[in-house]
Amino acid sequence: MVYAGSHATSFEQASADLKEEAELEISSQRIMRATKRIGGERVAQRKAEEEVWESLPLPEQQGSPREQVPQVACVEPDGGRIQIRNRNEEVAAGEVEKDEKETRKGRFWRETKVGCLLSMTSETFAADPCPTIPEIFVDPRRMGQISREIKGFSAVGQSPPKEKSAETPASEKRRGRPEVLVRSVVATREPIEAFGKQLAAAAWRRGFMAASRKAFVGDGSETNWSVWRRYFSHFTPIVDFIHALCYVFAGAMAGRTTEEAWPIYCRWAQWLWSGQVELVIAALRERQRELGVPQKNEGEDTPRSKVADGLCYLENQQSRMRYDEYRREGLPITSSHIESTIKQINRRVKGTEKFWSSEGADALLQLAADYLSDTQPLTAFWQERPSQATGQRHYQTAG
Image (cartoon, rainbow, N blue to C red; front, side):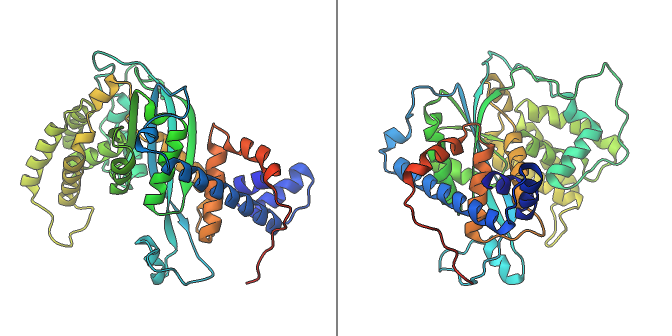
């Protein structure tokens, strides 16, 4: 029941799946109660593990509880979206987040916090193993798709013709790219401070703190970097290359024809790939002098706004964009793993027709993360659960 309730698109679909595949007549309400109860037990177990980690002296928190540690330890956080609608509208003082206040205007979308912990293997190099930017990032059609997916816009109109060469497989493996060995996932609806502690405790249990090479990869969100400063400041901070590239793409294309802008973008993209962010910043400053700064209340889609946004982003994140150095050290430079993980979780919990209570949301997020983890935390949970049973029934309160 719990597996079906956690994987199907709804509890009704889980009931139908069990009837069709296992010939079991189980109501959607019963599946919902069982799934939320087990998810709640896992949340309680997770919090107990966090308390154990938090009680350790700082030197032990920065060590490892296990002998085997990853060759490369990578932490990737990001946020998803979910609709929360509680029956009880009263909220305790001090517990209202900024996005929760939006419900007073009739909006129910809130943020979920999700993290990937990836143990990786990779080589190190004396020189950049891939000094030339991959073709996918200087392909007009693909960059149009990427910018739409990441930033919601495309600046490519009539794409300049691409010179035909020998076909390159779309899945070509870049030399020096780290290989993921084991992924574990954490997810919650709790505030960012609680999420940071959850992420740090999970990283400690997997021996990440003692790894010789450590990376913390995220987009430009200040929320992500507040977690890095508080819990992972000894990890190498890396801004996702593709997010940065989309700002460069928008700034290069802004206010220019495609034919004029494309060679400029390709030059800027190569600078970014090579870690020469200061050259892109200088070029964007020059472009801003040509166009001027955005006026008050000017729209986000104007050329001046796009140039200003790109310039601001690169200036703020410049210290986390040494991509040539990261490739030499065998570290990841994109947050693609957390992006795909959030899509997998959203398949279960996100939808315009789906509304959750705060407790129910956290229970489902916990189970979704457990099932996506290669470490299989639910295997040990189910084995230990019978010995911890009290014999008491669980009752559903009315209302």
